[in-house]
Length: 117
Picture 1 (spheres, rainbow, N blue to C red):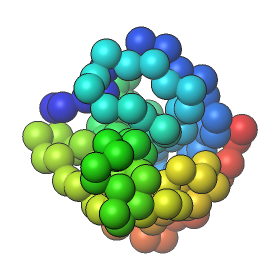
Picture 2: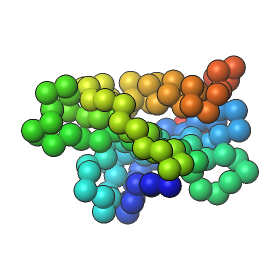
Picture 3: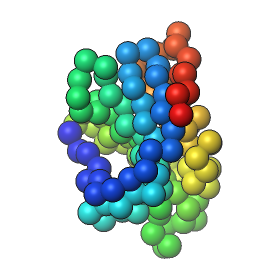
Picture 4: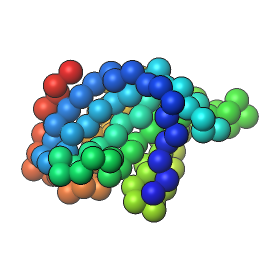
């Protein structure tokens, strides 16, 4: 699985949804060529490593015609670009959108996320 190469990060939010623990990271320092604004990591409670990541990444200046940030999903060997906009730079809006994406992908339609932090 493609995973973000995180050197340091600060947890901004924590949630539980179904069998998943979710952490939203900010202030991310990474060795990757992209500048992460936020990363959501979804960990199945029976596992130690995240099953899926949803990232908010800063677009290069020449790719900002549709927005400053793009959202990507890293899930197994699948990597999907979900498009660019301004809202992924806002913690609340990014978190809400990420939870909606995860609910569809992980089939958690009956579950509501519980905020822990």
